[in-house]
Image (cartoon, rainbow, N blue to C red):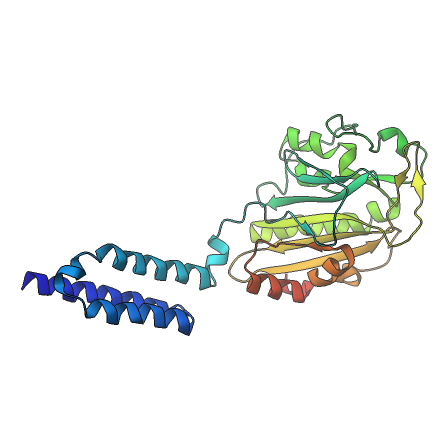
Length: 306
């Protein structure tokens, strides 16, 4: 009788695993595999059933894991370390990657500019009391590269990619963000106007949603580019910024701004979908997201949903 009870209990465990798989949206082929396991084990002798307890436990575990993968709320609970790091999809790219205290930079030795800079802004790090520091050359980055002297009398600002105001929470973070390898030649009207407004908006979103993932960098549209300084730092024709917030209903948004003053215009004039920014830049953003989530957030851009 005891062995029969074991048989019943273990069979019920398998049925329980099967019901979880169905309720969690397992596809029909996976449901069939699990169902076949139930039928197969139901036909075994009681002694054979005793040997399959570990298999039953495994089936239940697999069903629970499937539930985690298909649940909408699991997106918010997942481990997405490095989610902000983009992937280049159009061949090879001149780059040296450096992990700084508060951001990661991919530096292009041909253009003497970053390819991209990626970081996160948390609600706790969206403000602080650390003051701006002096701009500095980057001794850690190998040549060829840009130097502070290239910007002197160039007519362009040393435009932060990861902005100083995102790093007021730490002296080390602030120090790193003033490395010249975090800069691009930027029109002063853009740098102090629309670009600054978009940066402020990102910090507001970080406070509102707890955390945002940000990537930005230069865009080169022309065959021939203006260059500044002895080291011929290339002046980008435009800049991009993409922002992602997670949670139960993730949203993403992109911006593209020409490297010129945008006085009198609104942020909405520069909004683009992530998909459009990817098409222009050749990067795959937020590629660690499950495909169904990534495709959804990259297909649209509505600042009113933020």
